Length: 210
Image 1 (cartoon, rainbow, N blue to C red):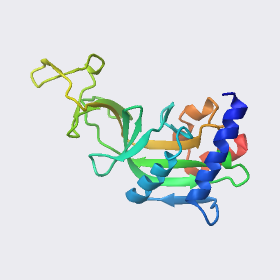
Image 2: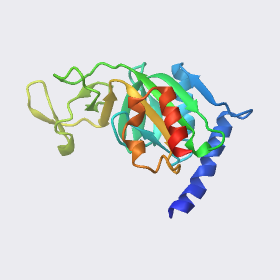
Image 3: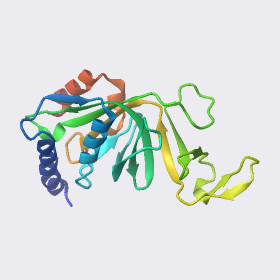
Image 4: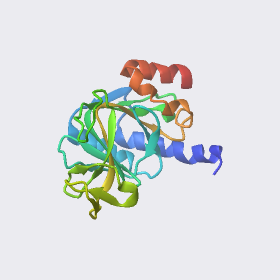
């Protein structure tokens, strides 16, 4: 599918999603801080397949297959092709540009989360582990070979239901329409949102992309 066709298909779906969330009138900005509300809004974002990307705090971005409640009641899980991304939501804000709906976005600010794995770095931003079916974690070492290690260091087969999981110690995530001009740019995946305040990031999108 060419870029023009992709935009022609996706942008109307993004607008439909926004108008579904705000059927009376589109606000300029609206925020949610209750976990249940944040979870419900994020679930709406994945009702239309392949419409948005989640931009990660450091760099890069992922597709979203589904959103789930985490074994840790403070957290939510965002799943991309079986890979779990776990964070503690603090504030979700929808920023709308009525003259350029394609560049409207959702900004998720997350609270701190203590590392589960062994780390000597006090400034760790995320950690990749293996989550077992009971919600506990083990080292990622051995994942590629389908094994883990017991308390004595002996190699054992990974239990059924084990999933690769990235836990985020905090940070800012942004959900954008992947067909938007910003969403298709390299800049979107540089972690820019994690270096700016909410107001600065909105102003940046307005100034440089609209």
